[in-house]
Structure formats: C-alpha cells, structure tokens
Image (cartoon, rainbow, N blue to C red; front, side, top):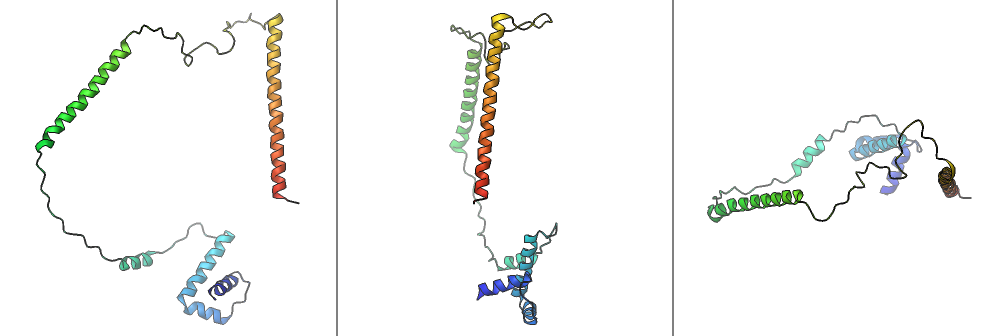
Length: 193
C-alpha cells in the first residue's frame, strides 16, 4: 500500500496522473503528505537540473527538537588531587636529560671524526651523478671548423642513427595499431550487434 502511494505521488508530481481535489485536501491536511509532496518536487527539480544555485534549508527547528530530546548528562563532582611528591622522579629527570645530551654529543663527535678522517681505501674519482662529461660519445671542442665525421666513422654514426629512427617508427606504428584495436573493442562493446 505504501509503495503504491509513493508511486502515485511520483506520478502526480510528474504530471502523469491527474490531480483531483481529494489529493489536494490530503496534501493540505496531512503534514507528512505535504512534506513528501515537497520532497518529490525537489527530487524532480534535481533530476531535471533545475535546482537554484543556492538553496536555504532551515534546520534550526529540527536541531532544537533533537537537543530537547537529548538526556541531560550529569558529570561527577571534581575532586581535588594532591600533587605527588617529586622524590625519585625529581632525581631521575635531570639524570635522563644529561644522558640524552651526552649521547647527542658523542654522536656529533664521532660523526665529525669520521667525516674528516682519511681512509686507506681509494675513493672513486668521479661520481656518476655529478659527472660533467657526456654520457655517450666523447667530448668535442666547439668550433666552426669541426664538421661531420668523415669516412667509415661517419657511415657508422649514420647507420646507428637510422637504426634508432627505424626503431622509433616501428614502435610508433605498433602503438597506433594497439590504439585502433582498443577503439574497435570499445565500439563493439558499446554497440553490440
């Protein structure tokens, strides 16, 4: 019965069912029906994208009613607590602070000694991250007289460049085929025959 009533409300709001005087009287007399009528219109406006940019909802009455229904919490009376005597706690606190300070100082001294010490093991001359030399090929002076390599070296460099360009072109063609295959698959899934 309730589901039929909800469907009838929805049909009335969507103008799929004629609105007669009995329904109007029920909506006017029953606050729950009036609220449902308003909610269904709001849902319809939202589905059609006709909601205003800003809506004002007055929930103060409902919040005030909910607060009135809340039971009052009674907190126990506060009792005074006496401060604990410092006794051993007062003695150990400075000792612990001194121990922490001594540990930090020891680590600092050892770190400085290790940093400044010369080791017998030879260190690598160049760090690959900080290297200023080019990673591929050799360094060549920049001048107007330097031309392209001649002879066999020039042919080898040109062959290597051609091989790399061909590899890039093949990879590009393969990527295009994969994209086309994905499009065909998506189209066939979207439009089954």
